Amino acid sequence: MVTSAYTVAFEGIEARIVEVQCAITTGLPHFGLVGLPDKAVSEARERVRAALGAMSIALPAKRITVNLSPADLPKEGSHFDLPIALALLAALEIIPKDEVAGVIALGELSLDGRLMPVVGALPAAMAAAEEDKALLCPRACGAEAAWVGATEVLAANSLDEVVRHYTGQRPLPPAEAGEVVADPLKRDMAEVKGQERAKRALEIAAAGRHHMFMSGTPGSGKSMLAARLPGILPPLSAQEALETSMIHSLAGLLNEGGISRTRPFCEPHHTASMAAIVGGGKGAKPGQISLAHNGVLFLDEFPEFPRQVLDTLRQPIETGEVVVARANAHVRYPCRFLLVAAANPCKCGYLSDPARACAKAPVCGSDYMGRISGPLMDRFDLRVEVPPVSYTDLDLPANGESSATVAARVQAARARQSARFAGHERARVNADMEGALLEQTATPDAEGRDLLARVAERFGLSARGYHRVLRVARTIADLDGSDHVRKPHVAEAVSYRMPPTAG
Image (cartoon, rainbow, N blue to C red):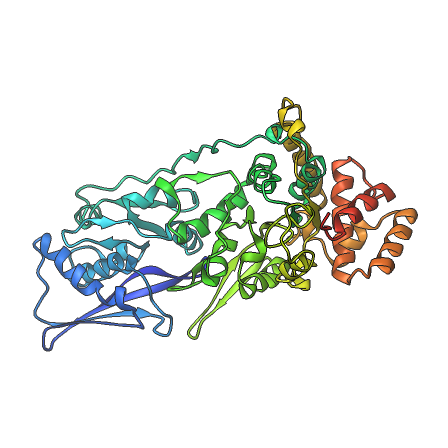
């Protein structure tokens, strides 16, 4: 007799159904596991054997074969322990095989039978809902998985509780969704003194999800400005929160099953590897650009990142997804993020100050900024120079607009975009517009077109640059409450397109 249990194997955020088949036949005693398992899955035999022994269940002196189907799909992770144990218990006729076939299970077994938490419970619950099955997982993962309300989630502390549930001795109650994680303490825009142009650019970036590049001397406030960007971004919608949480679930970053409505803010160090930024490593895990999906990716000391790492950002910026290619699989992750980069104008940082600049000025400036390729720089919609703030300005009391005031304008602009793109699947904000949609919604008036044509000819705008100016102009018009893109909107968008000067 062959019994089956079901689990999932992860390919990016996609959870593919895996059938765990178990057959007990006559022959020399053996416990075999086939179906392209990795080391962690192969070791499940010993964990399952020990867990069953802790429950006083002895394996028969027969040949036990467990097959993970489809056999050509790589199986990775310790979450296969529980479905293997379920298939084996059904084959031993300890629990009903029909009950086991109606759930998708995942969980790691300790040697005493306790169920240990695993990553990926949220995408596994999504897969269970699509297959019209329940989800069985460790207690620590239940609050996370229960956010998918379309399927029943059963969470147990041990394998013994699972057996008692399926034998009718003590049914497991459905798991309840975790709490919405409270927003962390946000830094206020009112604390930033001066830098009015940079704050305006930050507002435009937040309203349309436009990528932004800041250049300025050390201590001018670039990092301070970037840290206040989350405070003016609108909260995640329900769909965005689920998308983001699925990635964080695979990375093991959901604390106690809580889901946050705050947009992610990732700021990796410039020594981070390509696998850390883009994704990869063992199991092709998501990188920082995917963890920042629907949020902000802040790269400080931008030219200090390895050139190869920076250039890998070019395609994800355009497509909103990244494909981590490996010899045995191609893993796809979404990465629709707002990129904010900050850089000093040169290695010493004081290119614009003759009294403090190094002896290599001004050559050091072109050499330092030359580490950023032209195609990558062309993808920044907003380029802002952040000058140093004078001591007299620092002594003045804070009198700028608060983050709440700016966030209200950003929220209103985002609401206009949501209404505009209601019938478009791929476009959510102005930065997503392309093709006919861009021409339909962002074409400026006659004066604006003339201005943009002169700028394109004078400064040699690329086709990408031309379209990005239109997108930024559309966002400025949304912030202005205008249904049409006019010449002042184009003029302001063009001003942010000009490369930052050294001083």
